Length: 246
Image (cartoon, rainbow, N blue to C red):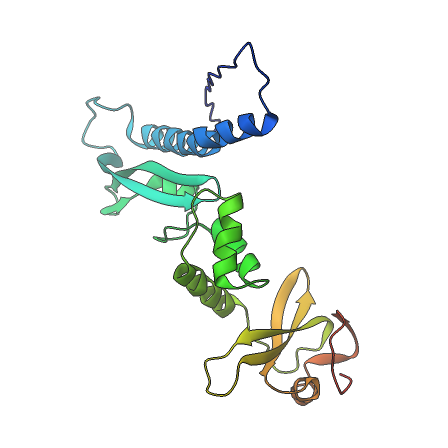
C-alpha cells in the first residue's frame, strides 16, 4: 500500500527585514505539519483498506459480499508530534458475524490508551533521570502535548511491570548495575537507596535483582543464591560507591 500526501505550505516573509531562523522554526512547529501529515497518512490508509474490503462508498453491492461498512468512529491519540484526530471505519465481517476496524489491524496503537508508545518511552526515560516535576518541564520543550505528573508516574509503573523478572539459574554473561536515590514517604527517611542489576542477552533486557536500602553485597548474595550470573560474567557499571565488591 502506497500513501501519497500532497502538502502545500504558505509562508510569508517580510521584504524589508531580516527573519531569524528560530522564528521560522517556531512558525513551522505552530503549523503542526508533522501531526497533520501523520493524521492524513492514517486517514488515507483507512480509506484505502476499507475500499478494498467493501468497495467504493455509496455503491450498491450484491448480498454475497464478505464485508460491509458499519459506520465510523473518531479516535484521538497523542504522539510525540502532537494529537491526532483519526477517522476509523467499522466493517462488518459477515462470514464471522463480527465488527472489525481494519486500519487498526494494519497500524498498531497502544490499545485504548491516549498516549502512544513514543511519548511513553520518552516520559519514562526522562523520569529515570529527574523528578516528575522536572520531567514535565523538560518534555514541554521537545513535544507539543505533555502528560501530567500522575500519568507519567503510571507509565513508569506499567513499564516496570513489563520487564521480565529474573528466573533462577539464568546464567547471564553480561549485566548492568546501577544505583539511584528516590524520595521516601516513610517517617524519618528522606531518601531510599535503590540498587538494581539488569541482564543483557540477545538485545533483550532482564531484571536480575533489586534491593532498597541494602548494600551491594546483599544484592550480590541474592544473585549468587539464585545462580543468576554465569561463573564468568561481565558487569558494566559507573562509579558506584559501595563498601563490598560484587
